[in-house]
Length: 105
Image (tube, rainbow, N blue to C red):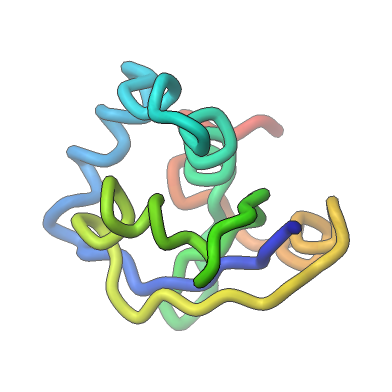
């Protein structure tokens, strides 16, 4: 399943998260590391300061493993909405990147 994830970034931890993403620290976390890294590296930020990204995940509840391992350290108020593959990215494509140096233009 694919999810549109929305969460409030903990601003004092964003530089660390960016550094971890640049170093691909999470890629080898099984089974979700590649999807999590791709999603976070491409995350967008809305005018209210909420980060949003699309992620593939099959946990029940959604993102349970990701939250325990990574997300709860860097975000609060995590919410998910089921989407078709690619629809989440299309919905947020006009928003600026959360990490401009990591995002693909």
